[in-house]
Length: 164
Picture 1 (tube, rainbow, N blue to C red):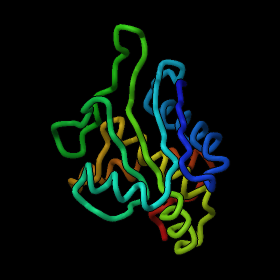
Picture 2: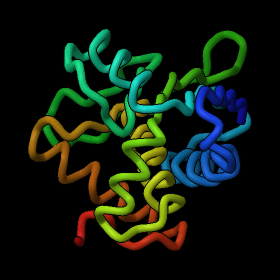
Picture 3: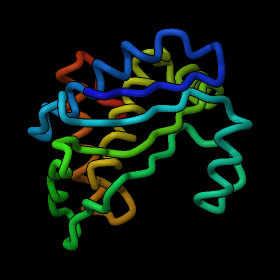
């Protein structure tokens, strides 16, 4: 896979192997050849992600992960499977961009008694599924997305994050 990681906060040591592992499992689950897929991840802090959240979602506060899909793959029907992305004329599948905040991830991991590695892996899976057209706004879509996350995380040896 063509993975571009930009680290703005030095606390993000080890982000690349976590991202590669999570992305590989998501792409395999979705039946995509990872060698064709392109994705960018920004490892930042709460200050930076709050600016991004305000700019793109009009929510001027920090969040754990943000995603910008390259293409709208969302299904029309609630609970439906998203459209599978197709390669462009170069043969690549540009999925989009993810930003993830160390501060929020570390705080949430501590609050839920999870390792930061497991929580970050979950959030990368979550963000990547957003790039692939999954969402959790509508109830049926949320049910599908959570089920897919749980299955992918299980393959990675990570417990159900929704069973707290």
